[in-house]
Length: 195
Image (cartoon, rainbow, N blue to C red; front, side, top):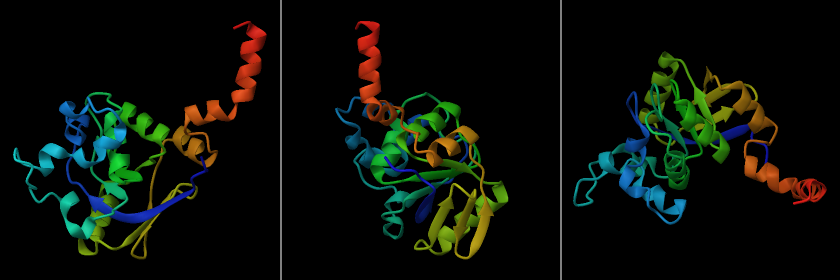
């Protein structure tokens, strides 16, 4: 695992307030064997009809193929606490989420997976969305250290939960990785405790 100061890539704007985890990944997909299977089902019910045909969702627009930064609106990731929602986002190929606000558990699950969740003021976010709609190939740079987002020669202020920002900058956002790195210390402690 490496420290994360900057993330870059093109963006895609998925419009809507209160996009819940069931919309991000419908419950019927939760019985997958591995999380890798979730990526193609991201936003399934708003992307596809009952026959599996596209509904012309922006994620299926060829202009946004390979986008790595998801832009949305307020209260993103609300609803149930399913970890599958950020897993689906990650397995689809998205590396970061920009929104007006985030549900707390969704935010925490994203952080553990290495997906920064940053917030922007509504007017700035609307401008960013327009920039990506006008030019889907526009690069976005999220600078976690400076708390800035750059797109098409525009610099925006972003906010990030202090503990998450610190975890990304200190390379400690994945508790499992932290545990594995300290495997020798864990083994010594277990031995000392008599396990």
